[in-house]
Amino acid sequence: MTTADAPVLLTPFRTAVGSIGRGFATHTVDALAAPVLAAVAQAVAGAGIPIDDLLLGNCLGPGGNIARVSALRAGLGLNVPAVTVDRQCGSGLDAVLQAVARVAAGHAQLVLAGGAESASTAPWRYWPPEPGTDVPRHRYERAPFAPVGMSDPEMGPAADALAAHYSISRERQDAWAARSHHRATRTQASGGFVAEIVPVGVPGTLGTAGTLGTPGTPETAGTLGTPGVNTTIATDDRPRAALTITTLARFPAAFTPGGTVTAGNSCGISDGAAALAVTTETVRQRLGVPGLRVIATAVTAGDSALPGIGAATAIQGVCQRAGVVPGEIAHVEITEAFAAQVLAVTDVVGIDEDTVSSQGGAIALGHPWGASGAILLVRLAARMGTLSPLSGSDTATYPGSTTHPTTPHPDNTAHTQPSERSGLKQYRSRTLGLAACSIGGGQGIAILVERVG
Image 1 (cartoon, rainbow, N blue to C red):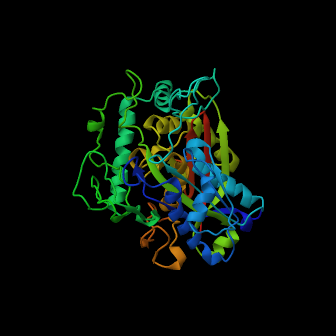
Image 2: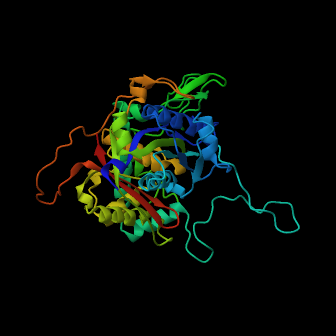
Image 3: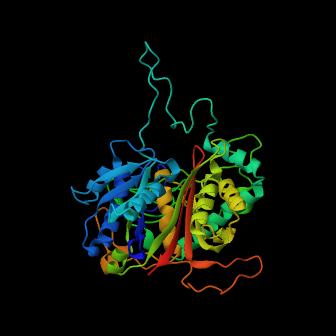
């Protein structure tokens, strides 16, 4: 494969992430996916080539190939095929990896990929009745990640087990959670999320838990919008500046008596969507926008009893394939389902914590399962300075959205680096980025990219 044919990730966008039952309470998963898909499609329209396919990650949707429903709702055209991808928390990232493989093999030239999740509107399911009765046995809470007879823990107790196995203290977990909220609120206050978020119109919104503001005031934390009055959501509703190490220390154990995992050092259940374009370097140059060239990808599997460590083996896999060490990667995004997970992964792999989720992660922003892997790539692009304006303009509009400002806010605009390694700090390339997820059932997924353009 030549450099001109190497897969490149372009024009990433996401919705705001909303807490379950709040701002996006009535938005179905396709209603969340459509605005970001339309934004990505409009951003690459100047290439003058058709969209070959759409791959969309989703975990808890209503079925019926929600990717195709989303494509039609986004106005991508009747002739754009689509398929839904389910690798649980890694679904959005896996959709991108599958699109990368299509482009790398020469089977496609332009593929849209990402993920979407609406925990708020996910259908309730029940196991069928016992023979001879018509009463459902009990609610179907989640699909099994392993067969009967093998370890298949719930995610909360699994995080407690992971913390114990890798000696991750409660204090470290709380410190990481406080860091996530602090960095997210700081980025939010400086406008650092604005360029990546597609504003989504909703008919009256519920604000964040804990406060009730003036009815009818949109976009304010803790407000109740007036039913029937259209408002716009363009701000993540979960980050809390008031969550400090001191306040987090007061939270009780959430899952295991005497455990160290709490509601405070865990992610929130959320709604959201994210998408991007996967294409070739030739197309990127034609569009004249920056992007992320894919260097290596990996999907791995291990012990289903400790699912939170899956990202570690996936990161080791991409580093081995690319011939780099983790210390050479300046920008890292790992799904923060639990602080214990991220800390265990960084300890095992040897990643500098300062490089991980430097603008906050899922503990602060929320974890819309099927979308989270794609959101990692949006965040990575923002940090590496590869966000793109729509249609070459400063603002743009598209179905289901309002005017969208597109000034990029990278967390590091300089791409120079030292010429040699020294001391314990390894050479760190400002052009390298990594995204990874741990997945229920003991799987992991990761992608290594470099900045181009």
